[in-house]
Image 1 (cartoon, one colour):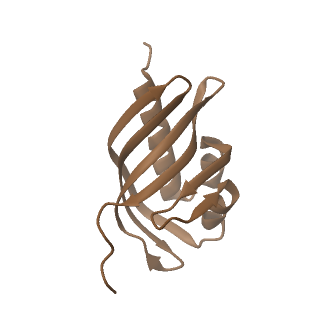
Image 2 (image 1 turned 180 degrees about the vertical axis):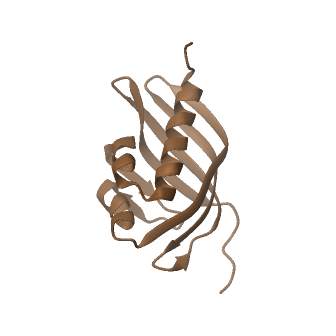
Length: 129
């Protein structure tokens, strides 16, 4: 049985979500490109090492993460997904919970799909402290 691009992308995305919840930096390292970037919901940019180091240091802890309502568009050896990321997480003890619009850029590396970029956006304006 041949799997579709959408199925392959969803499988990688599900592995990514499980690895984020587990703080599994070995799996995360293998799921992204060497020049991976994360653009956070407030505009900060992390390279691959910085992104992984948040988990290695224990500064960032994700206890729940779901990736849903995902739309995939393929463009040759690249694919873009737009979905919703619902998470319970904390950075240095400060909650980072909620729903975020998330865009992933996937690229083919040999025969496997890997993540080149993740960008998070707020789905609602931040509330006053």
